[in-house]
Image 1 (cartoon, helix red, strand yellow):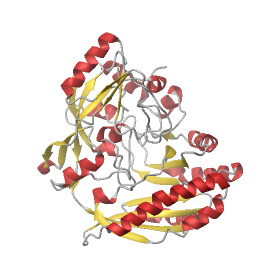
Image 2: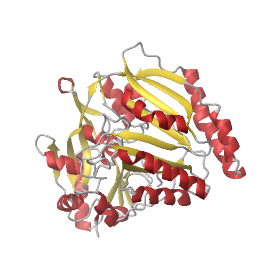
Image 3: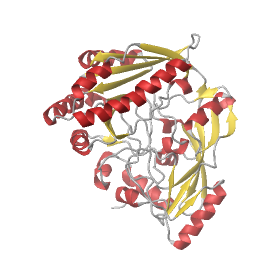
Image 4: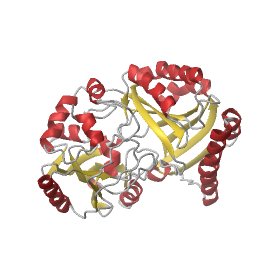
Amino acid sequence: MKNWAKSFEFHPQNVYAPTSSEEIQSLVKDHIQKKKSIRMRGSAHSWTGLIATNESFLHLDQMQGLIEAYPEKNMVKAYAGTKLYRFGEEAFTHGMTLPNQGDVNHQSLAGALSTGTHGTGLTLQSMANQLYGMKLVTGSGDILEINQDTHADLMNALAVSVGSAGLLTEATVKMRKAYGLKVETFAEDIKEALSKYQERLMANRHLEMFYFPVGKWSMVKLMNETTDKLSPQGKITKAMDLVLENWLYESLNILASKTQSYKNIDSFMRKFVGYKTFSNWSHRAFPTDRKVRFMEMEYNLPIEKFSEVFEEMQKSIEVNHFQTLFPIEIRFVRGDELWLSPAYQRDSVYFAIHTYIDENYRPYFDQMEKIFKRHGGRPHWGKWHTLTHDDLAERYPRWDDFKKIRQGLDPHGIWLNDHLRSLFIK
C-alpha cells in the first residue's frame, strides 16, 4: 500500500473494512490478546508515516455518510470515515455546511479532524474546533462517547490526536446555515502582496497567498461570503482549469526538472494567472481539484513572526539556489485551546512548502525546517517533518498531559506504529 503522494510503501499482514464500532471493538480485543497493533487510514493523504504498518491495517470505507442531522442545533452526526466531499453534499441537503474547511475535500472527516487540518482566515479556527462530540474505540477495547458539555478537557485533548489513543468512528460536528462564497484570484508581485497583506487579512473573511519564489510573484486568493446570485464555474471553464492547473502544470514541472529552465518556465506559467472570480455554495467553492502529486511540509508559526520568517525563507532560497515551480502556500488561522493543535493558544500563520514529486525535496525542506524550528514552529501532523519527541515536548505545553491520557486509553499501544512511537514514547 502507498500514501497519496506515493512517497512511501508498506505491506500490512491483514486489512480490515469494518461496518460498525462494535466490530472494531472486537478487532481491538482480539489484537490485545495477540499483542498486535492496528493502524488506520482516512484517505492516505499524509506525507508522514501515520498510516504505515506491517501488522494490521483498517479503513472506514464501509462506514460513510450522515447518521443524524440536528438543524435546530446547527449540528450533524456522521460516520467519521465519511469523505469530506460526501459530508458536504449530505449536510447541504439539510441546509447546513461547515463554518470553514481546507482546499482539499478527499480526506476523511476523521483524518482531517485528527491531524489539525485547517483553512484560512484570521477569525476562523482549524476544523477540529468544529468537533462537538465523538465516539471512540480505545486501545483497551472500550467504546467511549464524549462531547464538549460532558468532557470538555478530554475533548480538547483528543480532538487532534492523530489516531494515537483510539479510533474515531462517529463525529458530531458544529455546522452553520449554508452560505455562498465569492472567490477571487489574481497574480501580483510579492512586494505588493506583502505590502497589502495586513489590510487584506482584516478586510476579507479568507486570505491565501501562493508565493512562487523563482519569479518572486504571488497568486492571491480572497474569499468572502456573498448573498448575491451564485455564479459557479461553467463546465468549459472547469475543464480548462483542470487542464491548466494539472496536466499542463505537471508537464511544465517535468520539463523544468529535466532542463533546469525554471525561470523561463515560471515566467511562461505566470501568463496563465489572470484575474478570475466565481461564486458558489461554500462547500463547493473551497475545494481545488489537484491531480499533480507533490511532496509537502507545513509549519505553524506565531502570526507576529510572519515577516521575519518569510524574509529568512527568501534569503535561504536565494543563497542555496533552490528552484521549484511549486509555490509556498501561506494561510492564517485563529488560535485555539486544543492541546495538540499547531495553533494552540496562538493566532498563526502557516507556511506550506512543496516540490514536484520527482524532485529532490530534502535540501530545500531541511533548510526551511531549520528556520521554522528556530522560531518555535509546530508541524502539521500529516505533513513531512523531522521533529522528535523532545522537539514536540518543547512546543506543546500540554504534551505530558496528553501522553498520560493517551497511555490510559491505549495502554497496550494497539493504535501505535513506529512513527507514532517515536513521537509519543521516549
